[in-house]
Image 1 (cartoon, rainbow, N blue to C red):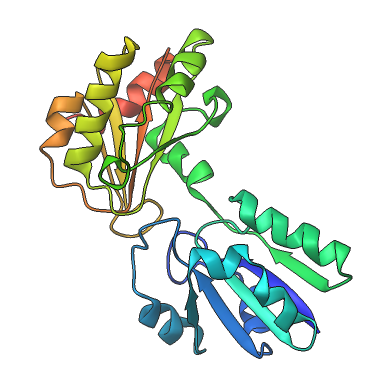
Image 2 (tube, helix red, strand yellow; image 1 turned 90 degrees about the horizontal axis):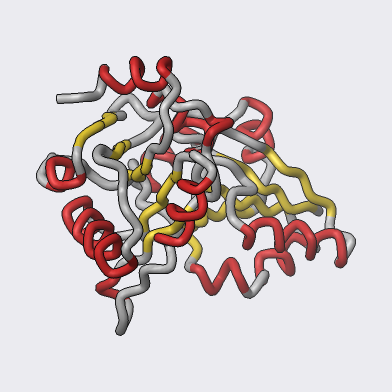
Length: 241
């Protein structure tokens, strides 16, 4: 019996051939869908993979109950993008080791690599920031701005992953307000990527105020660029409007 942690990649048909073969032998297949706005419904994954998929809540993943099932059956957990992008998934693997549960990890493309389509060098990115959805907090957390400041101090770009349910207009409002509150300056122009790694992918490079008014659908991420190499500058011109 075994536990399989499988990255789906960025598009619904991006799963690896060996991972797809494993799914056919599994007794139970789960999907972790609470950390990202999926660009496609679970039903499309089921049609693509020809399997039945059960969605899991955050608690169901974090309480590690799926590992109890893996002791007596073959269980797979599907993760959007790469399988080990979240620390929760790493914890599951550590528990498999402790409990002597056989496991296998299947990697795939993730937002961490797909952002290279902007033309920015992956080597020039600093720490990744997560922007919370203020509507779900009693206060207005601005701590993600510290990553922008820290990265800026070494000339590095900042990738900002936005909370599930946070739309572009509100994300930019939060970004601008956080900049004002903290005194941490933003670049004159920022980048937004919508539906990264899918046929519907769109990349925008403009001022925060202009991006706020564009039709950018979830899922999306933001990038605060820093010092640009001339090749990066040339690449970004393609996304200017």
